[in-house]
Length: 93
Image (cartoon, rainbow, N blue to C red; front, side):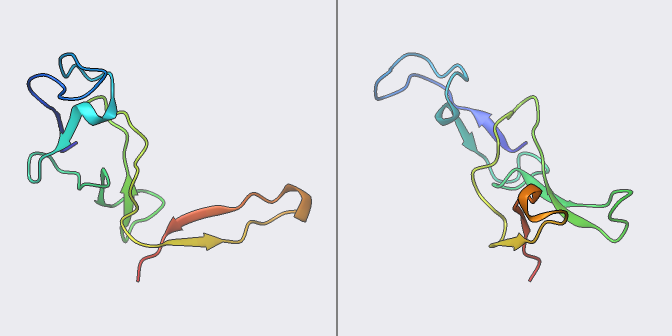
């Protein structure tokens, strides 16, 4: 991840030292890791041999991404209408 724990004390309540308790205890430092500000990157996998953009959770930044790399594309789920679950995937425009 390219998110790093800030140094020093929190200026606003709840106060105290930056210790990783809150997501705002971290800051994105461009170029310090191999993931972007969305905590993702282009990668090749068994399911996507031509590559795809993927989001990651890491031990250093175990936070569900708050940003999308691109505008989400709503997918239509399969199965009976009563059991369909809406899903989202990054739009690769």
